[in-house]
Amino acid sequence: QVQLVESGGGLVQAGGSLRLSCAASGGTFSSYSMGWLRQAPGKEREFVTIISSGGVSTYADSVKGRFIISRDNAKNTVYLQMNSLKPEDTAVYYCAADRLRVRTTHNDYWGQGTQVTVSS
Image (tube, rainbow, N blue to C red; front, side):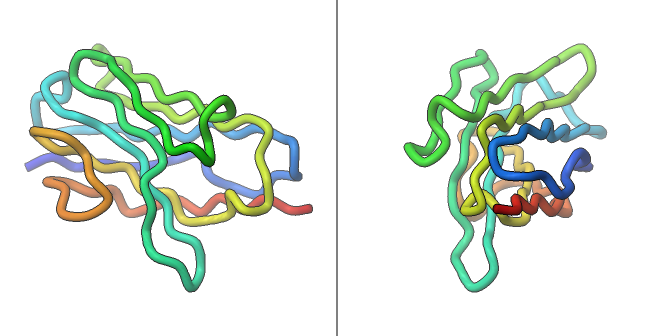
């Protein structure tokens, strides 16, 4: 059983930056696809970014060029560096892990979520 714990959320002004972390325990972290998804109030959960076990990353068009996902297998941690934040980035951000590929739904493991609020 893998546990995922997110941290780093908070309140930031538009144009600012935040870095989210997701610490994993209880599994073979390096073998998992890891990703971030988000859900804004009244909206469905959406894909943000994923990184494969081999380090290949994919981004949603809405965050491409502003967000960077990375992983440190020695620390069992995945990071999301968020730059040039916009009010529309406001959401609860979830970390997810999957043995195959992180998707918007039905991943093997989920974190509890961390709130990111971007003020205008």
